[in-house]
Amino acid sequence: MKKCILLSALALSGVFISGAAFSQATSSTNVKIVLTDFITTENGAGTSTGQTPGAGAEVLFEYPDAASYTAIKSVNQPGHLKVTATKTFQVTVKAMGTNFVHTTTPANVIPVNVVDIVPTAPGSGTASTVTSSDAEQVILSGVAPGIKTINVEYQIPAAKAQANILGKPSGTYQQVVVYTFSQP
Image (cartoon, rainbow, N blue to C red):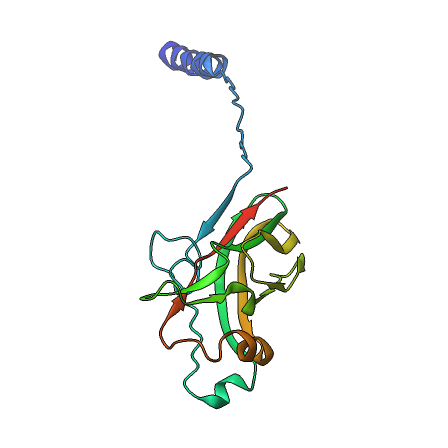
């Protein structure tokens, strides 16, 4: 009986001891998210890996016959420009020269102002149609932050084709058009 009482006493003291031995500690840490303002471009429709949007996308106007000069010519480029921005941004455009230059006979030129550039605002902002020029022009302003895809249509009105293209030597004329994305 003494052994039973002694074992019971030891068992009870073990419960009290193990309860007293249990302890708890806490620790905390700060979790931070650091944001940096940025604007970046991605490959637009028709571009190759590593190129700025639109740089690899060819915009091709063809004038194979007399009927070509009697109506507006339009080349639509859906998804032509892609941009990711953390703040409201704008897009400007400019030609890298005043003329489209014949690829084999540089003396033959067509003024860049024959082409109108018509952007589509990507859900926010204001779109402006511009006549191509070697001066930087705003085509989109007040575009909300986010990942945006911008459609661009290039147009040559019949009157401009008749006045500036008709009668030029046959061949390919080209000029580079540069888009700039900025956060004012």
